[in-house]
Amino acid sequence: MEVWGICSICGRSGKMYTCSLCGNLVCSRCFIPQRGICQRCQQGLKFGNGKRIGR
Image: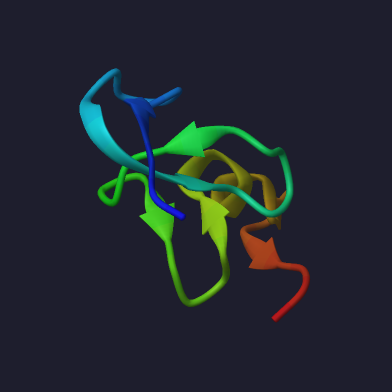
């Protein structure tokens, strides 16, 4: 099922993807398909000294 709308991050309209962590609808530019998450959640995986948690 395709979902069309406005990206919660950049405001572009078009085909949207749902972030598996936060549930926001985001466009292909703001979505990281390898992880199934948006750019904001990707940035949230970093902490303190720049190390990443998770994969």
